Image (cartoon, rainbow, N blue to C red; front, side):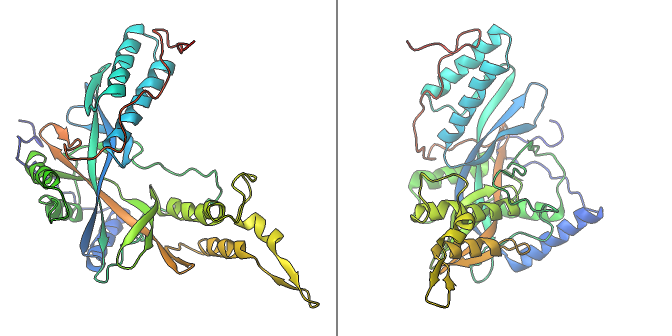
Length: 366
């Protein structure tokens, strides 16, 4: 048995690395401070993605579809599209294309969570999303050492790093002391309570033994809104806090004005609360006083996001916050955990793309 391997039900040994480089040490200190501020955890539920393992990858897997999807079938559909486009655009060998298209055909008709094709093993993987909360129920926000752009780009077409881009899943990789503490604390995490169906509870208990190790995925950032006694996600997850702020800016200036009938849905794409605020002002009385219309409220709220790193905003009686969300992925003797029998699919397998022939040409339906 190689170092880092474990049999079924046995946890792997952990390799602890104490950060000494200044930036890493600051991140570790930041994590310790976060535990003191927000020592409780709330679990939201599962997320799904796709991981791949090549013939020479050993025990390592690579995330190829971000672990952010709401049900297993969404991940299967993403893999379906990935393999279809590979067969169409990236393959010259007819035999390899046939193998890829055979895998696509299976994904179009079956709830399949793992398949091997063209020297690569693909698996639908499952992670648990959770967040830290303080004594009063406040969710943890971005930490001072979380990545932020030096010059924030607020343009609508801005593209920052993608969630899980290039992420390698390696259960033998060294971890810091705070990461070890979190992994150990979460090993026995499973659902409990009467609100969960019996099969969900049974699958959760079984996973503790079948997949005893915990891998912590990179943090994500989500816009949440506060209700009477809870927080609900509005958008996300995003790879950075700035990307989450930018999504809230977009909601305030573009999406919500259209949803509320303040900007025509079929109006110009570039129209938003900022561009339209000037045209909605009106002159009152002989003094020529200007009264701002309702869109100005949206524009002003969005403008307040750009004054420093704003992580909390109140708008029309609702509190919005940039929350730091986390994900844990369970790991067993055969690698990352896949979907559980009790996980719910919101859609069924179906054909997503036209048929291709052996040369990668779309087959006409005429």
